[in-house]
Image 1 (cartoon, helix red, strand yellow):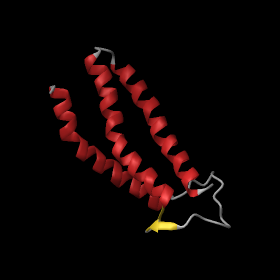
Image 2 (tube, rainbow, N blue to C red):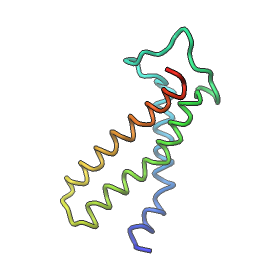
Image 3 (cartoon, rainbow, N blue to C red):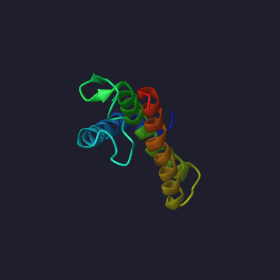
Length: 112
């Protein structure tokens, strides 16, 4: 096993924990984005605390995949001897997918 992969496996729980804390704070501060058309008349039922089923699935997906985005961008820079700007572009592109795909999935699960 390469040193990079060993280091990634060591850092994975730390980065997943950081992502969980930050996303939990964001969820408690603003469970729904104010620009979204939230179904006020028929909100999705809460499953656990303030999380609906869709929000909980979104939270779990984002917590487990955030470290992978960091490691993928570092992997591209380290193994292909590319400038760090390329790693930043890879991180930015994956972060956009990381933010919007689980959110859209949560909205479909919650039915709005």
